[in-house]
Structure formats: structure tokens, C-alpha cells
Image (cartoon, rainbow, N blue to C red):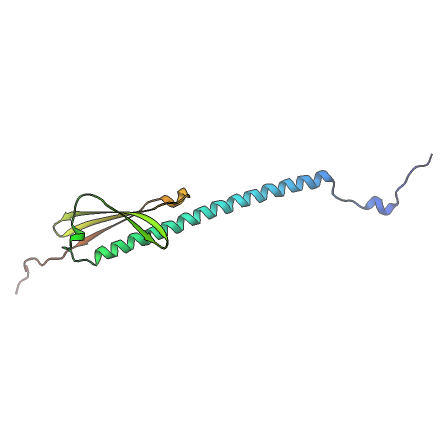
Amino acid sequence: MSKCILPKRRQKESGFTLLETSVAMVVMMIGGLGIAAVFTYAIKSNTGARDRAASIAVAQQELERLRNLPFDHSALTATGGVNTTSVTSAGRSYRMSTRILDTTSTVKSIQIQVTPENSSNPWSLSTVNVMAERAHFTLGPYQGGP
């Protein structure tokens, strides 16, 4: 009987077995899926932040418009209710609710709420609240002395 003996050079060569390669592929696949999940989360978060920033810009524009009106303008009349309108800015639709209250005879409280509409991303549908007070300055009696 003859025994098959491999040359010494081939005995020292080693490689990866099929099992080692499969385990390495599974570990890399789990890591890759984890990274993909983080990217998905980041995209949703960035989209929601972008929509929130656009909502804040719409609310600030409306607030500036109301600040530029005279104090006794009809648009600043306190009705006690909420005035809701639909606004389009940068191709997106927003629902804007404005409430104006007379705090005193010379101070009005303005509250504006803006909510993006028609979004499939629930992170984008959060409401932005902007509040401000508008004052009308009046001169009082002179209290000074000579």
C-alpha cells in the first residue's frame, strides 16, 4: 500500500474554510443592516427638522406682518377665537391658526400655530407655536418737578 504524502510546501498553506467565510459574512451583514437603520433614522429626523424650520419661518413671517400693522388695525382686533387659514410656502402647504387676545387696553397677546399638511412622515407633522405681545405706548401724566 502506498501512502499519499503531500509535499511540505502544500502542508504549510492555509486558507479560510467555508464556515469561517460564512460567519464573517453574517457578522458584516448585521453591521451593514445596523448602519442602514441609522441612515434611515437620520433621514427621517432631518426631514422633520427641515419641515419644522419651514413652519417656524411661516409663523415668523405672519408675526412680522402683524407687528408692522398699526395697533388699532382691524387685523389685530381680538375676537377671542382662533382664525385658521391655509398658507403655501416653498411648495408646501401649512395650516396656520392665529389667536389675538387683549391682555390690557394697551397690550395684545398674539399666538400663532403652524402645522405642515399632507406629509407621509409623522415627524414632519408637529405643530410650531410662536407667541408675542404687542404693546401700544401711551403718554401718561407728567410726574416730574421743576
